[in-house]
Amino acid sequence: MPLIPCSDGVGEVIDTGPGVSRVKGGDRVATTFFQGWISGKPTFEKVSTTLGGPLDGVLAEYMVLRENGLVHVPEHLSDVQAATLPCAALTAWSALVTQGRVRPGDTVLVLGTGGVALFALQFANLLGAKVIVISSSDEKLERVRQLGSEQGINYTKIPQWGKAVRDLTGGTGVDHIVELGGAGTLQESLQAISLGGQISLIGVLAGPEKALNVRPILMKNVRIQGIFVGNREGFEAMNRAISDHKVQPVIDRIFPSIMCRRHCTSWPRVGILVRSVSLFREDMSGNRVKHLEIKDLVVRGTIEIIYRCILMSNLVINAR
Ligand SMILES: NC(=O)c1ccc[n+]([C@@H]2O[C@H](COP(=O)([O-])OP(=O)(O)OC[C@H]3O[C@@H](n4cnc5c(N)ncnc54)[C@H](OP(=O)(O)O)[C@@H]3O)[C@@H](O)[C@H]2O)c1
Image (tube, rainbow, N blue to C red):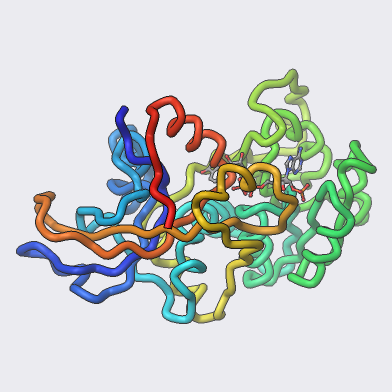
């Protein structure tokens, strides 16, 4: 502290420093979540380069970034749509593609209808997989059916949804689970997973700690894979798929920044909330040369944490 918050954004390159070759002035680019994780496995150093902490984030009018921390965004997406990609979309892509290797005909279970979940639904559809979604709302289940979910379960009406999911697959279980609940839902996921299946452990919406019977992990030969967003190589691969298949991110509502704090955590929604603010720019050598023009910026499910940072640091946000 003080720290500029927020991790995801899209903007236009205003100018570049000497030696910059990946981007040029006028390019429309997104920031990568980890500025230093380009490819391969993560290391402590690579994942310590997150925008919004420890590095200054995207809630700024202009930014100076290294060219390695930027990717070009799919042309068919608006800035607001493209600003949903750096974290939520890449996390879903890393789970299903980079780590999960989901194949046509597989069945994927997605927990909830938030930002990561709906990208997972869309990517699973692209891969030719069948998707089951669990949600707290029948209305949301109906909406995700229109987005390609074949079956849905209301987890408030059926708290033991693990068995219900298995029943939907004829007793086999699902091949892959996009696990966003964490410790609070993992036992049910272990009920729902097939032998040899993968659980991509991503979120802790239902809590990070709870007693767990680990026997199903051994006896079902389950692979539990932690997912931490992903690297730039994955981001670029994902963008090629998004461009080729004209994927449209699901944006529920766009709020002016001043309203975000009030609505982001409580508004019943499907998909992602985006706020209109703007961002940034680029320079290879790290010098603060000129600045990038700001466009749009995503506020994700972690907005509570972001705002807690803001409150704790007494930060003032200028709303447009
Ligand atoms: N590891 C990573 O790299 C990474 C990256 C991004 C996000 N995350 C984490 O992943 C989680 C989801 O992120 P997000 O941005 O998609 O959040 P989000 O947009 O806020 O999604 C929230 C949705 O999750 C569902 N949900 C909440 N509690 C649930 C439960 N007990 N069981 C099943 N579904 C539940 C709800 O869906 P319904 O309303 O339909 O019930 C809710 O609307 C968060 O914990 C976030 O911190 C991790």
